[in-house]
Amino acid sequence: MVYGLLCIIIIALCVKIYLMKRSAREIANEFADRLQTDTNTLICISSHDKDMCQLADRINVQLKELRKEHLQYHQGNTELKNAVTNISHDLRTPLTAIAGDLYMIEKTDDLTEIREYIAAIEERTKAMKQLTEELFRYSVIVSSEGETVTEEVFVNQVLAESIAGFYPVLTEKGITPQIHITDTRIVRDISRSDLMRVFSNLLNNAVKYSDGDLEITLSDTGEITFTNTAKELSAVEVEQLFDRFYTVEAAHHSTGLGLSIARTLVERMGGAITANLENSRLTIRIVL
View (cartoon, rainbow, N blue to C red):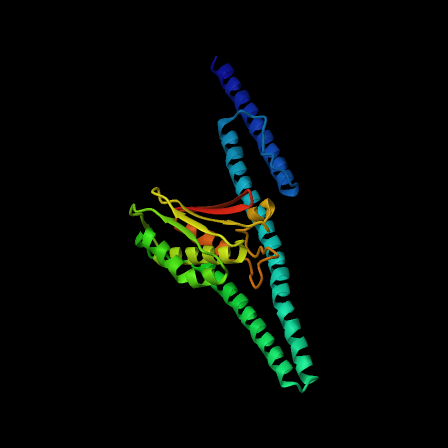
């Protein structure tokens, strides 16, 4: 009887070992297949063994992470190529124009024309300086690994100060903003300098894209919206406004980093920023 029981145990162990080896081969083969093919299919095994199923599940978790990193790599590679193209274009255009102006200066003795060419060179040089400074600011922000210093920030006051600082630029563009700031005290534990940078970038964005109007609202719940008419923008362009290095043709002298910087800073503060277009009205919404 003992011998028979022992034989049954041995047979059961052999079957279990066989099934585990088969599951291991299935996992190995499917894992190799998933690495070679572009698919979201997960590893599936025929065995119902608890340990082998758990192993397959853990490998599937790692496969998901690997695919996510793979996608981010390809997106980053595409963004880098687009960045090189955009930046090269933004820098080459004024450089070519400057070279043309210098050539024309050499060909004329008319002081009036020379002054006009020099003024054009100065304007294009300023544009190039703005581009390079914007790139530098972006690189500093995204590469910052230290902890952000936070404090209790009176959002109402920071928004009002930012609008006041930008008011001359807005009025110069013929924009008289409609401002609706709640009397409710909106306080958040965030970085004051980061919030000011966000507001500055959004106001600068309004200067670029607005068709002459701007409405800024801070609600009782702390939601902040910047709304303006932007007939030149399409729904597709709005979806890409926060992408790094994305530029709309109408936005001259810009690397397209302003809104990307704003998104980075808002998310770093634990908030969210979105944009939508309805009836040619662009609304950028911030929730902190």
